[in-house]
Length: 372
Ligand code: GLU
Image (cartoon, rainbow, N blue to C red; front, top):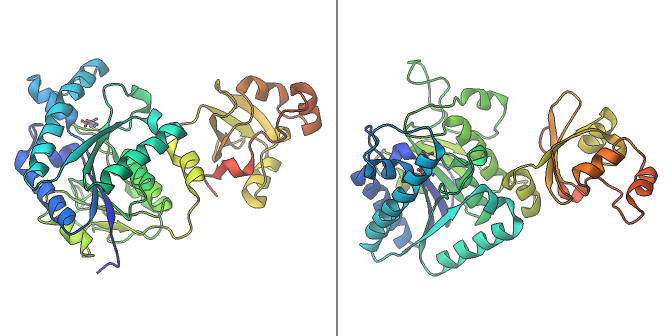
């Protein structure tokens, strides 16, 4: 048995959990998921559902058997399918007298601090009034390069945003295995992952299935985000009987990632995971040492290179000279300014940009070390 005490949880169902093999929505399966959520809600649990299936539902309505590759058609399908999907959830929860609220988010909404906080307030208010928020990516406007895809990261960010106790990622495998269970008969389910290390990352293999995006890699990434936000994570099979009830009861099903007790604050979490970087800085050995081992800010003198077109206040990634990611932070300078002052002492940088400019390229309080 696991010691988990859950009052607020995010449950994510991927496309494979809500569709049949032929890609069509699996209504009895959706009904079984909702029944479990209703029963948890009735016991006083606060529930947020993150659901995929809009594209699949839309393709069904459009009579398309194969998933197309072009974005406008996928977005049109999502637009049509989201109506279907929310209608189904509204109807199913409605049978138990529970109302649902639709939340559609893109990376942009999470990346902008104000919108991030707005989303948090809205979801908080919905929960406070007993409503089940039903979240999906806003596929109709999401730009291809920064799409969440199959919602694993989105669900993790939402779980952190609302300070949930548990994130349940329901999928089409029983969890993370020691090897690919389809190819290796000896493969064993990993019940507990106390730490997401290199070995765990290597076990996670991406999937490439016709009707969805995502796989174990995105689930492990989601687990990393959520556990860093003090949210425990369980990856489990969405079609196993009473799976949500079993997880909440602490039964040893699926793969469990306990929440980290030592975590960074909300702002740093947002810098680390919530945003997408607008540019890259490359730093020398001395600066790397100062950042990683001495908790220092990044000064212009340590910057050896700059890529991308960013403004002051944008989030940038910091790499060492070998190209290894070191940190993320909020840049005090634009890319143009950075190019002008890189490698200079702070006094020289102040002369170039004016005395009122910031001394640090990235202040420590607005920086997160990503790898040690
Ligand atoms: N948000 C998408 C959906 O609901 C994700 C799944 C996909 O890319 O197929 O359909």
